[in-house]
Image (cartoon, helix red, strand yellow):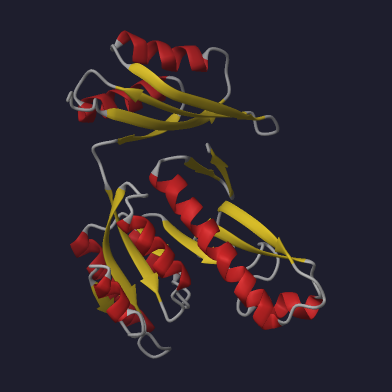
Length: 284
């Protein structure tokens, strides 16, 4: 069986101008590459062009990554390039609720995500046995108001030692500080149990029930220093009525949370999400 050719994925954005698609595809053709998929979007109001292109490369993937970034710069475009040879190293942050954790762990076991799940980090011991049952390393780092700074330092040291490139907050019920996010310096994906920007903060299902909403939702977004305000990756909703209790909303919401978070993680790991400002372009 012939070994699979290495593929590269590039996400580009910059000021719109004529000929960008042709210049990108022409560069790939001239270097004997074969485009597998390409998609683009233009923000009409901002005049910004976005593109995702995936191609088989005939050259050394690392050298081609550098060469493509240099070519994109000559077009006035910022580019992020990733190779199919690279499997991102991911850590899950969890607390007590296990629905998102179990869903993601089972999807990893089934091979749905092209990455390495290298650690589960929690402020509670509740999911320790389950994590080890999946063959995942579990790290307990208790957090309270008195030791938050020390706990985050311990978490950051773990992430550095493990070479973690993405953190997923699978219903981790602690707010990461601005200092943590800055020190980590890599993407952090959070699942919030409401249709943001509605009902940010704590107990959103209780807030939704008190307002008598007819739709509840879940939102996966990149974490930023401002609580529940990061660029949104994926959202979904479920219909509810006056007959549903808070417990009903929580139960229905858990299903949404699992699906929305899994889809956001998949898109992120497949390099389909391009962040600009407070928004994202998702090449689904």
